Image (tube, rainbow, N blue to C red):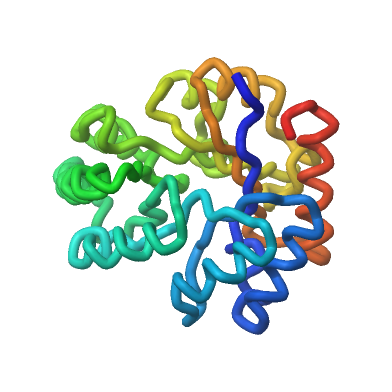
Length: 250
């Protein structure tokens, strides 16, 4: 298997993106990244951003789109994805009233299934990105299990986030193995001893086990993200990328 795509989730740099998106993309490329994942567009059009990506020799592997857009504007999402050249469309969040019961998760699963069926016509893959709350149990199953079991395996896949699995009281490597081929991407972020976010390899998570599980599952995309940074976020990204290179991942 070839080495996975290594991307950066631009949410890490959201404050900078809001001020100078082009400059952020240039700096990301200068650090050594060749791919990005969008967490938002900050008022920029996808076609405009695609021009900057091309100028920086960057590709956009994926982008996060809210569940409301996946439900109410799937044609617009598909259009944005085509303009950006995405491989994956990702649902990044569930509001509190969308995750209070098994019935709520079944409703979300229906939305994801329908959206996933539509974008597959454009050779795109829908994924769901979880947080800690998807590990709460309803009627004997976690929210993440409800989403898995109520959707088609080829239509809806998952973007496992190593930090949020751990914060939800579970084992990231075990969940990657559990999902197998349905784990299309992994968000790499470490958990510091104080429970905060850390650079990959700097905290408490067992990345050797995570990488082994991801390789066995055929994961093709790793995305570095750090929700909050104690120092310059660009330096934090450099540290995380260096760890992946030292491990032979990047």
